[in-house]
Image 1 (cartoon, rainbow, N blue to C red):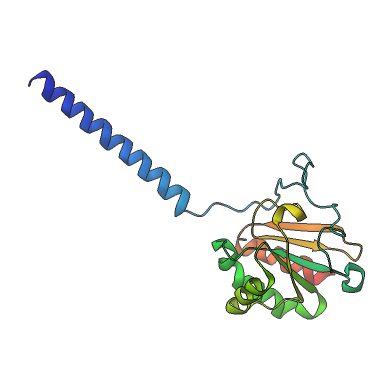
Image 2: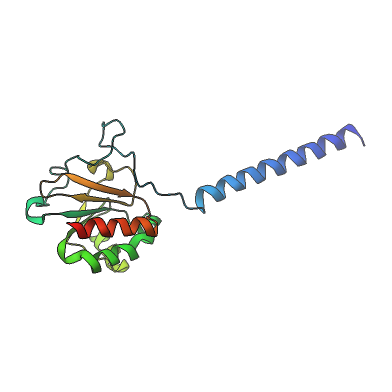
Length: 177
């Protein structure tokens, strides 16, 4: 075997190895779900990585009367988020099981008419739809659910596409109030 043949064989093996690694990375990034975090490290802008629990949304979402609402569930979602779309059956379940005792506000970065069309298409009913960037309300990823008290303070939060046991924890927390 000549030196040229050895170089070609080595180059072919290296090329195949790089192609396999790149394919694995792309499959992991685009096709395998990332686990949701039940205790997120999201932060209010400039908050240094602390949880949103205890933060106020009072002036962050205009047009929401927190005191009139009592407890409010804020759905921070996007029409462009496939995890938000995948979470729609759970949002319908929430509305069916605790909807009458809880106000729900959907906050999306898209225009309100586009957001309402998205929610209607998914069969998700909410009390109000608001447009805001996720950064405006301190949310770093969608979907995020925020349970807010009558003074506009976040008391609980859940991030990501929830697993069935996490969904049950949300339902239990919402029924308690």
